[in-house]
Amino acid sequence: MATVATPMTTEEMLALPENGMERWLIAGELRERPMTVRNRFHSRVMIRVGKFLDNWLDEQPSPRGQVLGGEAGVRLSHDPETTVGIDVVYVSAEVVIRQTGETSLIDGVPTLAVEILSPNDTVEEIHEKMTTYRLAGVPLVWLLNPYYHTVTVHRLDAEPELFNIHQELSAEPHLPGFRVPVAQLFE
Image (cartoon, rainbow, N blue to C red; front, side, top):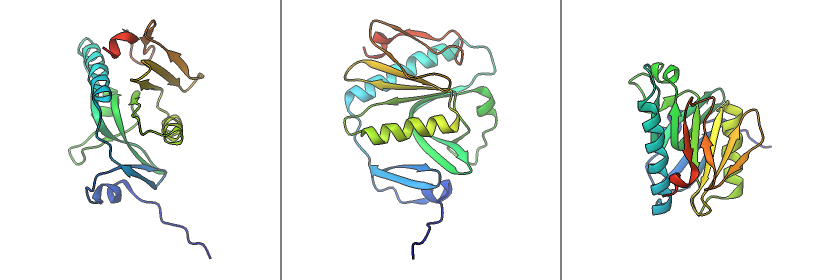
């Protein structure tokens, strides 16, 4: 007779010991893999993306959202429990205002999730991440490849679109006025 495991909660996942594992909770199911040391290509791109987003944010009227980076913890859903770490994320002012001092996680769906590929990412893992973001209703996801200098843009209402270093990336209409030459993300 097969037994059905009880879905894990975000609190249970966060209570697990720090043992060098990267963890996501997808629909109550724990995903683990050894945490990788971020290489300089990944780190540089993360800083560049964060810089351009933060510069854009500084020009926006109040109330402003927030740009977070470095595997920012985001609870995308409570039912089922889905909590992930995102390389760079922009959360709107509406999401920020709902946060309390009781958790270090962002509780809510971000406007933009940015994932930067690492050498050990598998096709299956990337597919699951993109599907998770889509099911949660994240309106804009950028998948950056620091080796080929490309950005794949995923939108809820369109097929993925590939941008290269000869093109300009826009976040319209979700981040009004945000535009950056793709090449500048990889400098």
